[in-house]
Length: 303
Ligand SMILES: [Zn+2]
Image (cartoon, rainbow, N blue to C red; front, top):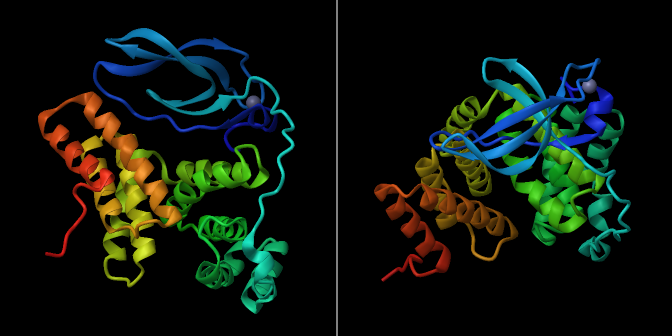
């Protein structure tokens, strides 16, 4: 995973730092195991309060990229145990026509030929077919969702790719487990997309433009997904109030009981926790509105 060399990539996993400002923050200490190939070194990250380290976050392989900027990967301490985890069961056994559908077969053929861009439109129509009969988090749906995200990345649609990876990665973790090859492929690809975009601020700007464009397209699921990713990018920028606003709107518009909605609600809960910890008066009101929505107290009524 550029700019890390092969061995350093193998001994670490994708990781994204949250940018924090103010008295609550984090700081790297130490400088060990410098790699001769890629120049990265292992540093230990601590949470700090008033610039005093208070708790250890973990060890990271870091390459400085100028000033206070860096790229980092989390060091995997023990080799990942070969957990025997059964492949999850899919309802596709009751729908054999899905694997035989022309769009899906064409998509797979292009993918085999290493043509993810050519495969993309066929995976997109195969996904639409699957989501009509299978759950959004069915293993057979998730496999195609991941391919759509990878196809978007391969065709330089970085914002929409990031939005898909944000949605699909927690679903892959839940269904296949954190160490499954599909889950690892998703986290690596998401890191790659972020490197291309160049930081949370550019990511938030890109996603804001995409959400604005989505408003003119009749695709509710796409709008929700992109806006949720915008919320998470704003969170990474430290724009916590704006993040809560975006995620509140997503949860308000998302269809109840849908597997994707569960992911969006989780993101809103996380953002609420951060906004409450910061404790500004305007923010606390935003969090109260969001908590009301999450608990159903604030559910829209038609009277
Ligand atoms: Zn290296």
